[in-house]
Length: 332
Length: 205
Image 1 (tube, chains in turn purple, brown):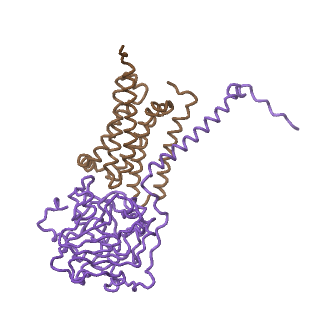
Image 2 (cartoon, rainbow over the protein chains, first blue to last red):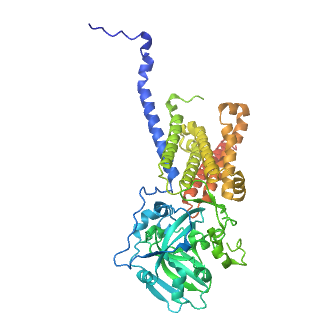
Image 3 (cartoon, each protein chain N blue to C red):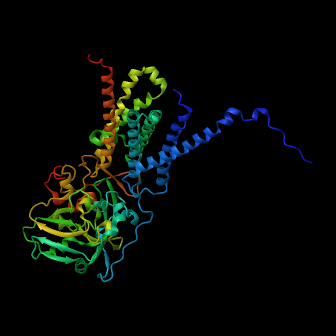
């Protein structure tokens, strides 16, 4: 028993003038979708310019190179902070290493250009014997130790990093500086092939940082060759970098090729670029603000709300005596 | 003026595009794809989004003056409102996540730091513009008064680009590009305005 479906009511029939506009409707819908997509894409692109995509996976940990001295690490509890470590992935993908790129994630992507072996370090200036040292010689000379330090960047973020290295004081003692050595300078590799962004003129290359000799021989000052128990990745300053935990991070020269013992305060890179913003001392100090932002608090990487910044990054008991009688607001 | 059906899709499309850009940013934030300091990255990206929209707002009139396009004028108000909405999100994130709603510390930040002061002033100046963005507001204020008030957007544009410039540590390329686009727009307006003045003057016999 079949039935023909009822005819649609006359009110349901599309009026002829609307029927004629269906092409226009389709065209307008198409324009709407295309314009929305173009505007959305354009705005996304513009707003993410300069903040390169961080890698999805944490970079692999480098292994000690074959033929390198054995990688044995002493754990000494005295240089440790009881705070949760910043994840390896964050420590190795959120870096300021302008020679490898200006964004935080570029250094990790560009680090493959940097060849940390073979590597030599020149020792120059006021020492008993100026010489060129192989990185392996340094690794043989000093037992490696792990030290867990806070790292406070001048940009008001911070991390907790398990470094592997040896005390700078031990190296300085061995190099026998003369009595005229008042300052020590640390120069980064100058080689636009290995450090491609040295082609840009954002800073004067090579990167140079420096310490007063009494700061350099302080037991907290560390020459790091690794982190998280493995050799340093390029983006963290392989194969040798300076770590001065009571100072802002930019004091820690990366990928060091020269250690110079000098009589005068050495001209340092950020200080020359903006002397009112970055002092030679650069001690972490919540009371002396950067001219453009407050140093009173910091964001620990991995946390949302800021935490207060500690004088000398929490190392005041150990280092404040180095600056007795100095006006830290002037010598910032 | 009701938009011609030909252009009726433009405003909804720009709003949708803005929502898509925000959704993408929110999605990446939720997925942990914004790196080790996601708050700072989100704050920067919202700021850039707001400045891009503000620059687009200020480019509508120069496009009309130079190329004779009229469609940019149909989206100009929406672009301005979208920029203001983005600035609101940018400021809210700074207030909440960056400063933990510590109003005293925010006040100190604003007064002591030129880059934050400049950004905050731009935000304040946008409020009356957003408030009087409706057709009714134009009628209420009368057009000449409304027009005078809305010239503040030029100041907002300069402050916005300056806020970005002062914030950057070493590479000033991007803020300079925004400043150049905004200033080029001012130059176009100036040329057009002088041509209009000259046309109005009676010719010397």
